[in-house]
Length: 95
Figure 1 (cartoon, rainbow, N blue to C red):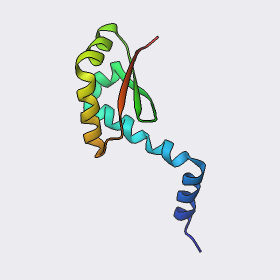
Figure 2: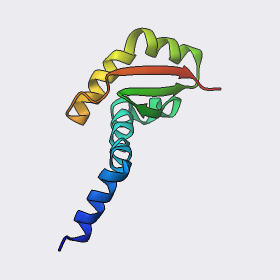
Figure 3: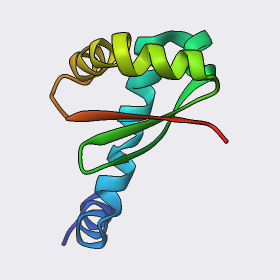
């Protein structure tokens, strides 16, 4: 006989939902690394196939993240996660 926890774990694995739920850690790590103030202006909106997409409110922040600080934040976020889960960052201007 298996426990309810074992059944839930198996269901999440088979359905693919387990991986999706695990992605919340990426969003939380981004927010922790960049801080509350910047995370309001540069919000992580999706994580697919190792690419974290961040939506930015201003062109100035977009340029700064693309050219100067984005890679550093990627490295720091992976360190926060304890593994290299984010392979690449994608920044886009909020519409």
